[in-house]
Each structure stands twice: as structure tokens, then as C-alpha cells.
Image 1 (cartoon, helix red, strand yellow):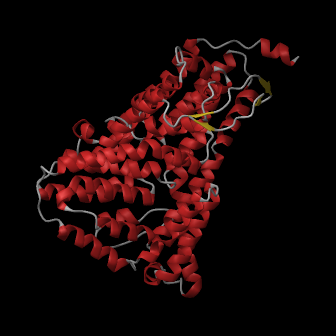
Image 2 (tube, one colour; image 1 turned 90 degrees about the vertical axis):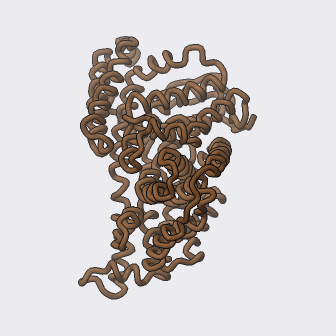
Image 3 (cartoon, helix red, strand yellow; image 1 turned 90 degrees about the horizontal axis):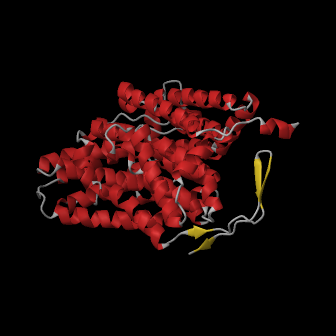
Amino acid sequence: MENATLKQKKEPTLLDALIPLVVLVTLLSTSVYLFSDNSSFGPNQIALLFSMGVAAVIGLKNGYSWAEIEKGIVKGISISLGAILILLAVGALIGTWMLSGTVPTLIYYGLELLNPSFFYAAACLICAIVAMSIGSSWTTAATVGVALMGVASGMGMSDAITAGAVISGAYFGDKISPLSETTNLAPAVAGTELFEHIRYMLWTTVPSFVIALILFTIIGFSGAQQDTSSNIAQMQTLLAQEFNINWIMLVPLVALLTLAIKKMPAFPAVAIGALLGGIWAVLFQPDVIQNMLDDNQQGSLGVVAVVWTSMFDGVVFSTADENLNALLSRGGMSSMLNTIWLIICAMSFGAVLERTGLLKAIVALFLRGAKTAGSMISRTIFTCIGTNIITADQYISIVMPGRMYKEEYAKRGLHQLNLSRSLEDGGTITSPLIPWNTCGAYMQGVLLVHPFDYFIYTFFNLINPVLAIIYAYLGVKILRIPIPDVAVEIGDEEIAATQPAQSNR
């Protein structure tokens, strides 16, 4: 009876597969037009769910039952649950690290690097340090980036080059930070482990970043050389007034990095880092906690309440500088809920495409002629860039290609780490280069420089995808697994005859 039911199902046509994508592109374009950089805070989720409904209707037309489609949705969402847990832990960690002075200390010492003789390179490096410490390119650009744009204007230096340096540094730091949402999302979609994913990305990100720093240094020699010490001193003074700044505040960061090196799974490692940040706040930032106590919160219970709140709802600071307030006032599990919402909607849309066979038809179109590792990885990167252009959202540029190519990488004997790295090389860092993408629109809004103006100066964002494609065709750091000889489908699970074993070519 089951075989008879399977025979009644129709193979989807290319038109069937393209209809949900056309609907999604249309709705997302409308979403960006109507809501600009706020489109990822609800409108895009509705677009994804509506497009999922269209895909489901096509699946029903082709003989799939709603129970089968719903089962596929549940399975698709379950794939992202590990990343969701990590994101919640990351939210708690950011909150306690802000409260404990760990992140402010990183910013304080990072500002020491700013030298007028190497302004562009220093701006890039500072943004990289801040973004790596907080895991957010957007927050880095809107705070430290805005301050650096003001310094550049006062020194008579190029706004476009400064914006390129800010974005290059912010996205490098975001890309290698275990606190970043996209850095957690890519391995979740591809099926790899977070810290392994970061270590594997270093092969393309570090050389690209070093080249970018060299280029910014060369350009900087022709820039204006005026005094910036007063600007730096002002921010450092504000940080020192608010926090106890000391190298010991970096212990939570060192502990997290040590756990990562020891290959502890990401969720418990980040959770331990968050708890250690809370302890550090109690031990070393009593004045900060005291300023956050309500009138009805006193004594040890009040201190516990402040630390507890920082974990689920973040922290809010009120210093004399609004930009500094915006940089420091963040974190908490609640800050991750919108990203989780978007992930669930995107994974649901991809799951319906996969369950109804529409994804296979799309993959077949894109994979025509792809035989080598170079062609697979380059097509993945170009698909991510194309998704960024068409759908205008970096999260979708990671989720959609990841879902499309995951099975194909295994069939061609390519480890999933190749996929997760390619998703970031093509998806995450190209998003701010597109004016109508939510990231491009956001960067223009906070830096007041059009993406077409800063485009050629975002050296890291431009070099990284190119270097990744060169690596792929040359066979540099391409991980392989045995190609499965036989695959037998049993329900929702596919059992391969050979077990994958990692090798390095």
C-alpha cells in the first residue's frame, strides 16, 4: 500500500520548483522596499512563511499529504535546535561580559592601537577586535564605526575608505567570533561543529584579512596625519569612569578560548563563559551593579537579580556618550529571539522544498556540469552571492544554499566543513556590498556612505570569496570523505554503506 502511495506522487517540474522562489524573491524585495533595514524583524519571516505555504500547495498538487509535509517541517526545524541553544547561551554571555567589564576592557585596549600614521589599518583592526568580542558586525559599525567615521572626517581622510575599513574589520571579527549569529548558523545548516567550523575558516579569513590590512596600510601613507588623541582619550576616559579596567577582566575570554581549544562543545563552553562573566561582574564591578539596582533591590539578592537580568534581558548603560551607550547596552537571551524566529521560518521554507522534491529540481539545475571540488565550492559561493542579491538577506543566503547543497557535498566525497566555510565565504561577508540587502542598507544608514562608494575599499569582503575559490581549484585545505557506495532510504533516515572518515588533501 505504501509503494502504491509513493507511485502516485509526481516528480516536480522545473516550473514547480521556481514558483516558490519567484514568490519569495517578490515578497522579500517588497519587504526591503517597505521596511528597509527593519525587514528582518518580522516582514521577512512572513514572506518566508507565505512562500512555504505556496511550496506546500505545490507539494499537495503533486501527491504529498499534509502529514508528510508537516513531518518535513518538524525535521527541518529540529536541525537548527543546536544552533538555537547556542544562540541563547551567546545572548547570556554577551550580557554578563558587558556587565563584568570584559568587553569594555577589550574595547579600551583596542583603542590603544589607533595611530594617525596607520589610521585605516588601525580602524580595520579595532573593528575586528570589537566585533570578535561581541559577535556583531552591525553593533560594531553603529558604535565604534560611527566614532571612527567622525575621526576620519575631522582628520580630512576619506569617508569611503574608512567605511571600507570599518566593514572589513567588522565582518572579519564577526565571521570568526563564536558569539556571532551567522557563525553559529552556517555550521548548523551544514551539519558541522561550531569551533571546527571556525578553525577551518581561518585558512581563508586570516590571509584575506592580512592582505586587507596591508592594503589599508599602504593607502594610509597618503592620508592626512592629524591628532586623534583627544577622541581616543575621551572614549577611554568614559570607559574607565564606568568600569574597573584591568587585564584580569579578560579571564572569561581566555577561559572560553581555552575551552574551544580543548574542543569542548560550543553550548556548554559558551554557557560556562556566561556564568564566569557573571561571577567576574560580582567580584570586580560592584559599582556598575550598584548603579543598576532598583530602589527595591538591595543587598546580595539585588546583586543576583542584576546578574540574572543580564543573562536573560541584557544590560543598559547610561554614560555621558550615546554612542558608547549603544555599544554597551545589549545582550541577553531575549536579544536572540528575533534571529531564532528568522531561522525557524527559513528552515521551515527549505524543509518544505526538500520534502516535496522541489529542492532536488533546483539543485539539479545549478549543478549541471559540476564535477570537481573547485566547481562545487565555487558554485556554492556564487549561489550565496546570488541569494544575497535576489533575496536581500544574509541569513537566507546561508540557509538556502546550505539546504540545497548539503547532500550533494556528501555524494561527491566533500566534507561538510567545506560547505559551512563556503556559506560564510560567499554569504555572510558579501551582504553589506549590496545596497538593497538589509546589511547594505543598514551600513549606509549608520556610516552615511553608499555601498557603491565603499564597495572597492571593503578589501576583506572582496578578497575572501576569491581566495576561497582559488583554494578550491588548487585543492588547498579541501577536506574529503569516502564517497558512499550504497544509500538506502528508510523513512526519514539515509544510511550510507561507508562511514565518513575525515582526510586532508
